[in-house]
Image 1 (cartoon, rainbow, N blue to C red):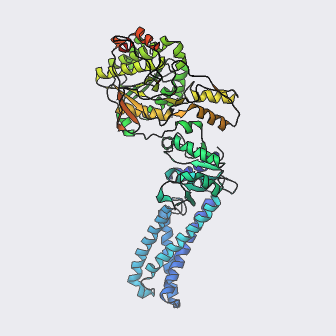
Image 2: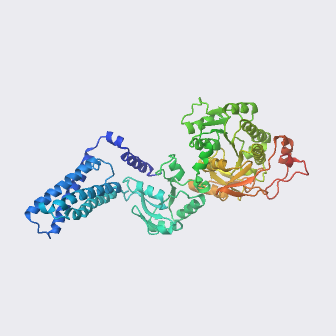
Length: 632
């Protein structure tokens, strides 16, 4: 967004100025820097001279004998010389600390106190002989420090004022007055070319009601954003809160829009800590933020316990979920990360995201189809993965309604192939990536993924190991999903197609979903289905309206009606499933009825696809025992 480049350039400059001592020693010192350091030393010398002379003058009520003046001047000179020597030894005047910083002031105080102690004891011992009052140094010390600190304080005020953004910068309200807001203000308020000028803070913490952070006051609570915009004249609202979710962002965006201001967001705290994004990467709010942002606290210790040092294999590594899983898993130091997919282009993109190249000549990428049992078995026998994330699947609901046989081959038999290969080599953790459509399934996709959950539960029962399924709803930005389709239609000026005015869906960003999937792998017990908390369902019609509004275009919305197998409202939990949350606040646990491979009945499964759908959106039951239900 506007001003981001200026902010970033200042951040880089700040980082360079605080580089290591070795780099600083090599870098040539400019004439301006030498001048500032010389001036700083001169100020400190003058402070010692003034402090000692004033201390003696006060002791004699400003009636100092001439002989005592000479001794006093000599003492002041000695103190100043010793101070300069200490400054050289401690590199005080060689840029060790930023000018006027707390670190520099602390070092100054230590030097002054040291000189005061040594020379003070000498004066106490020989003061009467040389005509200097015994308490001179102890009276001079606070005067010296007051002068040194005062000059630095005034200099910092002048420097900070000169670095502040100009009046032509865009006035901005910052939501949040915590760590992220403080660091953001540090960059903005010290960048004279910043395009952003902070005019106020909003925070819900009562303890911060009177806070002034880096010269910017808290002017109200986040719920008072409209009034604050009117009060401050802000035209931009920056959300600098690491835990701001979609519900909060939608509320803020609506209120800001009513007051005539736009909204921007800072990167998530995880993105900044991982180095993927800088604090200064402030960007305009997106539709992804408004419907799918669910901040996740990553339990690094939990994940490292079963990933670090282990051989990890990801199927479907070239897909949206699989590639993001690979990127995140690579940060936890697996002994080996094996990316398996049938799509060579997807594998290249995944390798690029993990290794920084897409040469496809290393053994971390494996081209294979999970439908091929013998091929998959050979790969597992050779690589012997200890942890498997199974993300390979056919996922497009209307396509599978036309070709249910393909769904059976990949989502059912393909999953069974991966499970058997993993069991064969003793894999201890197996995570089957499932979907909300497996809860009360009404589609080929839902039914096939439900069978995959049951097969995974069977494998967990057989091995006693951590074989689990993780179920969640729509992820934002995956290939062929709703948002990219809407964006393409809006860009081309074509009508947006919505199935039903009341249709709702669950949404989550891909990185946040993958964080929870990885954590689920560490807490799931044999045969469990873990269900991610995806917040409240979102109206598809409202999403379409927001995207049209954000585009500034006039786009028509066309209702097409629900497609075969499609639900009006998706569900995450089946009608006969009970939930518990024993370990993680955003991950629920339930169980799946295990089904052995011998009980798989393709004909019965296909027959179930033909059963009518109840008004509540669940599939009808098969007639009598031994029907398609038992076959699943």
